[in-house]
Image 1 (tube, rainbow, N blue to C red):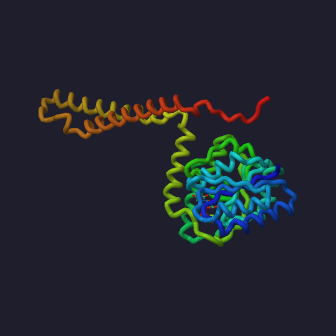
Image 2 (image 1 turned 60 degrees about the vertical axis):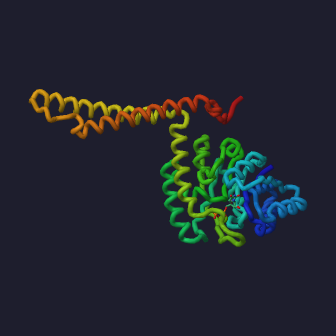
Image 3 (image 1 turned 30 degrees about the vertical axis):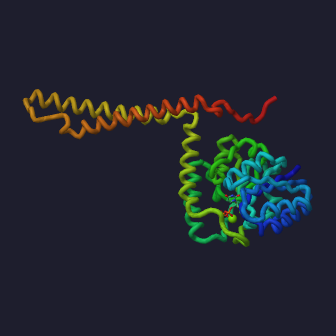
Length: 316
Ligand code: UDP
Ligand code: MG
């Protein structure tokens, strides 16, 4: 099978028939063998009935339905697990992404040997309140992930070599950082294609402005996991040691001040008069906490089911 199209959706009943016939047309024109996997993320409208109907007319259409709304990332992860095509293409269900991009995306993966090609909505049809924070968000994501050539991390339209989607785990709200997840899994040939973007035709957006706050927090989490996920002591131990060093220096200063005062017969000097006393106190308490956090972190990774879960790229 050439292509699996994975479509996560939440209350998109109106768009589905139009989207499906458009994809079918593109597949037929290019004579691709394909499947469409609709992942119904607990829609409360008629989306699931519509999908069932569409599937009776085309055996290439498959559907999975969650019992409740879990989010776009769980929906993608479920679709990825079922995908069988050599190239996996993800697409939003709201007709903002154009299926006409599929042949070129397919070609970039198969001919130019990209692992992942992300769409870039260079000209967006979204309100300014969304496009400006998005620019900032992408700049930060580029910096943190080290994937310098991507302009649009969160574009719903992406193409993957099959191995990539089988080796990454998209959870929580991490769909915003799939290129980063792919890079961490060793798939570093990541490209970009400018894609057509359209205003939402039916329904409303499913993400509010909290996407930006959560997006930044997720990026921080991912950065931390990537760098110290399996060796937490390397960061907490370093911070703890720095704190102890600071505390030690402060203690030495306090002691020196005390000695000087004793030798100069100044009995009005108490160590609690010195700012270094408090600095030493705080630094040693904080340093101890860093070390304890590091030890607890190590115990957790030691017991994690993931600790020896290496993704094998190839073997014979
Ligand atoms: N979506 C989903 N589960 C959710 C929220 C969204 O499957 O909890 C789907 C949604 O139906 C659409 C895609 O994710 O197919 C992108 O959502 P949306 O168009 O609302 O995002 P935006 O384009 O505003 O970034
Ligand atoms: Mg959309």
